Every structure is written in C-alpha cells, then in structure tokens.
Length: 252
Length: 323
Image (cartoon, rainbow over all chains, first blue to last red; front, side, top):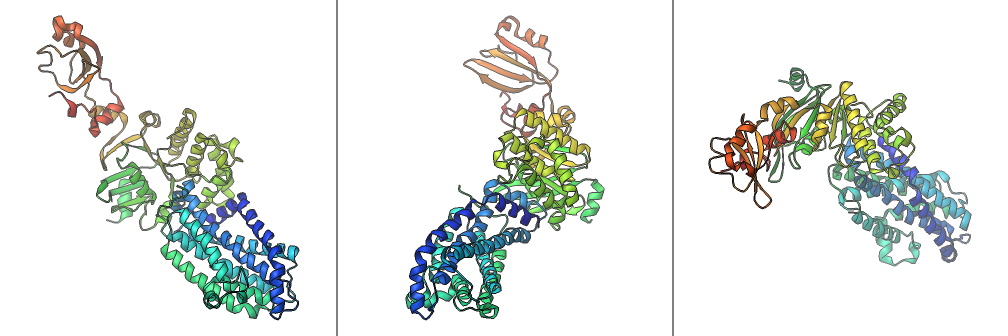
C-alpha cells in the first residue's frame, strides 16, 4: 500500500503528461467524426453522428500511451536511484508491482472517462440508451489489460528507449488493427481477420455495443471477459518475468 | 546451532558470517565475518573495490551472497527478508530521492514503507528533519534541493523509521562541511539511542569524529578490527622520516631498520626508519655530511599510515623498503 500511495502522489505531482494526452484526441475527434458518421449511416445506423466510433477510438488509441507511463515510472525509479531503496524495504516484489499497477489502472480509467466526456462536449457523444455501467466495465477491463501488458514489456526490456519504441509502435499497431483509427468495416479483410488479437478490438467492440447499439452489461460481457482474461495472463507473465535486481537504464 | 542462538551468543544487532561473493572471476568477498552490537558504530574502511559496498548491499538484501549467513536482530535476513528489512535503514552510495515529491512526502513515504504507524509518521518525520537540518525544506520538492540538501534527505530517509541497524554507504560523498557535520551528529545520536551503525567511508577524519570501531577491509577480506587506539597500538611502528640530498653517505644506513624509501625530485631520497632511533643519533651518523640532511621528523601515530600498513598499499613501508 505504501508504494501505491507514493505512486499516486507522484502522478498527482507530475500530471503534465496526462494533460498532453488530452490534446490529440481533442484535435482529431472533430476532424474525423463527420466522415465516420457518413460511413456509419450508410452501414445501417441512420442516427449515427460518427462520435460513437471516433470518440472511443481516440480514447482506445491514446490511452495506450497513458498505459506506457507505468513502465516509465519503473524506469524513472532507476533514474532517480530510488529503486534500490524500494528493493531494500520490506515491500515484496509483488507488492512493488501492484503498487505501480493499481494507481495507473485507476488513472487509465479516469483518463478514458475524461476523453469520453470531452467527446460528449465536442462532438456530441451520447449513450442513447446504452448502459453507463457497461462502459465502465469495458474501461476497467481495457485498463487492466494494457497496464499489465506494459508491465510485461517493462519487465522484459532493459532501456527506456526500448519501452518507448514498444509504446509508440504498439499504440499504432494495436489501435490500427483493433479498429480504433478507422472502423473495421473500412479496413481490408486480413485486418478484420487478425483484429481479435488486438485488445483494442475488444475494447472497441464493447464500446460499439453500448454507444452504437444501445447495449447493456450483458452485451459487453464477452469483450470484458476476453480483456480481463488476457490481463490476468499478462499479469502472471509480468510477475514471473519481473526481476527486481535487474539493472534498467533511464535515458542513459 | 540455530541462527538465533548464534546471535544471542554474539549479542549483536548484526551478525554476518563467512560471507562470500564473486562477480564472474572476481572474488569481491572472500569469507567475511562482521558483528555489530546495539549502540556501536562500525566504520568499514577500504579502498574502492575493497568489498565495502558489496558487504553492505548483501546485509541490506540488495545482493545475494554466494555463501554465508546474515542475521539482523535475530532475524535470518535470507529466509525472512521482509522482517529483516523493517529493522534496517539503508542509504545506498548514490543519492536516491523522489524529485517530484516534497521533502516531507519523501520522508513520509519511507516511514510508511518501513511500517511506521500513521499516527507516528508526522512526529518522526519532523524529528529526523530537525536532526538533519531539513525542517525549513519540508515543503520543497526533491528537484529543488541542492546537492548537500539532497544528500541529507537521502540519509534522513534511512533514519526516519528509527532502524535498529543503519547501513550508510559513503554518506558524505560530495557533501559540504556543514552537511558532513550534521550527518555525523545524526549518526552519533542514533547510535546513542541504541542503533547499530555500519558506515563505509574513505574519509578517516569522519571515523575519528564518530569514535567508531574500525574494520579494515581489503580485497574482499577483513584484515583487522579495533578502535583507532588499538589499531595504532598494533600497527604503528614509530621511527623517523628523513630526507637526504643525494645518496646517503656509506655506512649511514647500516644497522637501521629501513622500512620505506622513495625518491623525491631530481636527487632527494626520503626514508622511514623504524625502531627507537633518536634524531640526534641519526644526525651523528651523517657526521661531516650532516649538511646532506634536508629534514628529519618523527613518524607520528596516524590512522592513514596504519591503514596503509595493514592493507599493504603503495606507500606501505615494508613493500618499498630499500633493498
């Protein structure tokens, strides 16, 4: 709990990155909403504005960068030379990992909610009868999956540059293949085939159920289940791979 | 014999036994024993690479020893690392503080991490801040501190939970005189309150100021241990230092215990002769060539020279004695 509390304070004291992560969706959402709305209306959703796909899409895409922050926090501990102090404390490796993961899952969910709210204000995203609880479940499951994935990446790589590369390429790859950049219907057949391998696909599927098809909790159980199961596997892998005594280089 | 029984026998807060550690082909520690009692300050004295940091890191749980046992306050540090860690305060060699947290937040975090109950945290943070001159800086972020202030905070983070065993790895590196003084006073105060302290350093004056028990470690072995007075008594050889212009006249060195010889400048030679040689006798040996003598001085008791004698460093008398 002590690590968790400290990480929460660190995030609170150094929030500029999260602020910056709002800027891109704010710029992109109005640009794409009309075009995507046109496509959705042609696909059998006559009342669609485009916000139902563009806003969750931008949120799913940019929250990948937010998830990467959990890794940067671990690397920054090495840069600040505080990592050894954590290791020398009574905190177990598992509690250190949890101490990093939990605050970032919460931040990830809050960030995602923030983007959805901005989307509502900017491009008119509405629930239209969809379940807010279903939205929340998808957000939590997606946050869990991405944060544990980034912890596995952090446990695997030695330098912050490697982490940064995975974050940047991963966001585009996972987001693109999962239908966060463009609706899957507009993408080639092979992308639609491999899309279920991307967590973004399941997050988008859940949000689409709610925002476009007025779905409830029952309608998002499959995507939520897949994301939670993937997150559990990733968490186990990260725990097994994580070596507290490994040296990591922070902008060496 | 169980570990706890052995600790009882030694009565120590720390009992490290037969610690061995290698890095590849390099033997960093070759069977080190170290016991430290409550209220005792032990200064680990050694050159770079002697094994000081490796030993401290093993006791702190940062490194795993290849062999040997570490017991802290009766707790087996290998079998119960968490329990041992609660009893230890460690300030590693490199300054490590949270730059985006304030001084108070840093101290509170380390108190929290060490299990200090919430009701006591604020009091203990204020106390350690007072002790290390950080009271006026409590609201300042780590990134806004000077080097000396960061160093004090770094050490304070190790002290804040009032550990029973304090491990300080070169705590005064890069610190100014005032910071050094504050750190020494704080460490002395903690020992007076009953904590055992292991303090690694290169600075001999600090060892004297702390009135520490000195452990000389060299190439992974502990060569000797004792108070400053005991070490000087055991290793100081007395004698005279003298400097001669040119080669000493024939026969002058006959019968003298020449412990050290070195050339200085173009044609001056400096000698250390051991035993009870008196200055007047030495001058008499030069006779008419006494004008060759540039200087004569007593070889005074000095911890630095004792250290070099024990470790066989480059200016150690025996190894460089005139052939």
